[in-house]
Length: 629
Image (cartoon, rainbow, N blue to C red; front, side, top):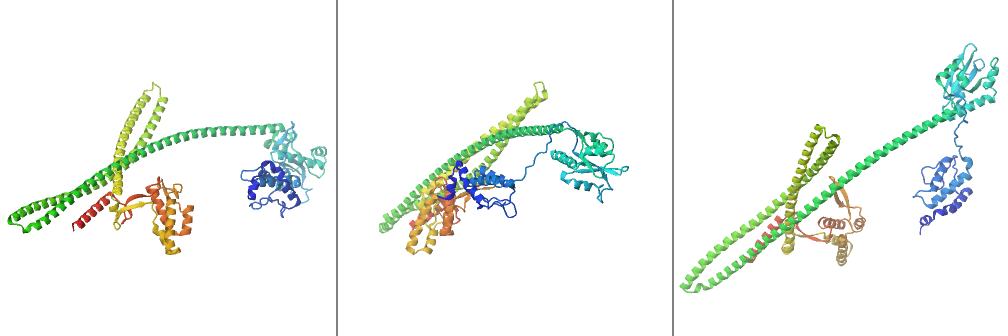
């Protein structure tokens, strides 16, 4: 048993025990997790395209494989469980700090929102060449607080400026605003110190988190804050966030309900269409079965008719031969009696005269026979015309089927419209009632047309079935009764065994590989073996393709048996086997045994009844001439 089978035999309960070995190997350094560039890698997935992971991604990968999917072996799961344990215990210092939601404790203090920082006492005199009046300077200086926008207000009187800094409006922005204010408090340059030293401030700048007193203050900064900011408490923001989430959840719920309703409606429509299609397929199968039965009946009648004609022909031929033999015997007797007396000569003359009259009668009989032959050929021609007419009726039947399906759809549509009209209009609505009456009359006309089409279809199917049965029975009787005549050897019309492998291909190939005696035995052995293979109903080397929207069976050249045969014995033998398989599939797919068929060897196709009967008459005339000579 292979190692993979042993791994699959591990139960899920043994994973925790099995993981200890790879975990110790990870700790000992046998498996390397850290790459040369500082990135992490999975030592158990070396063939994967992705090799570099961050700590979080590698931990997620190991945990996911460890929990397992259906296509993972138990050993792989145990290895990745060990890797996850190694990452959590031994490489915990590699983990990236998880982002924390910067939410302030709930209070009722009013803050300027979006979160805002204020910087005052900005003076050019103390700037030491720094462009303090440019917004880019302040954005860069306070970039660690993720400053979004800067507004500078200059006071020409005091030669100082005030800076309003807009931060992000989320909870990270709130955290940065707190850090912004704490940084100034740590340097003792907060709002508290600014209020105390405002009359005689130092050269340093002061900064703080904007609140309600800044919002309500006089001056340009207060006016700007009132125009661009709102006063909100932490509680207000939490409630707004909750309302937004509830609104999104409600919208998603409504959308999901709408999708489910649409899905239910589509499912109902699909079931209705599927039921309608199933009914149409059943009706089509019924028509096909009826057509098949009718065709078999027509073939049987044709066979019986041809059999009667051939039997009458054979009887007439037999009687004609007997008459000719009697005339020959009488002529010989007359020649012997020429030496008799005059009286006897007179008698002989009278006898000759009667013989001449009989010969004349025989000639007339021969002419009648010729006329009978012509009548037989004419009957065959009539059968051919009847067959062509039957085929034309088949086409008409298919058109009638299409017309019937179209009428059925129109009837269903009228019924649907009629139901809608009956539901829309009441008994008092005369216009609607008139329309309903008109639609009912149209529906009755369509139903009557449908009945007429059904009767016409039944008549056509019956006629086609009779003609086809007669033709097929005639072919079968010709094969059974005239096999010796049709297999005379050099004739172009004969009986071919459909599905029988041509042994010449096997003899040709075996002569090239074996001695003469061995070649004959080997060829016979191989031919018999593959003939049995062709008869096997379990061997079906075909595949189905669509040609003009109709499924057709063709040889599957990638079939395992045919590929081996072609590789071992060559193209010629493989082609002979394929030809036999195709013939069996065409002429006797259900039985899979060899069947005889009337064949035109000159043109390589199935012979028509006209060709077979003409050939038989020619052969009979040839035999008569030979016997007469």
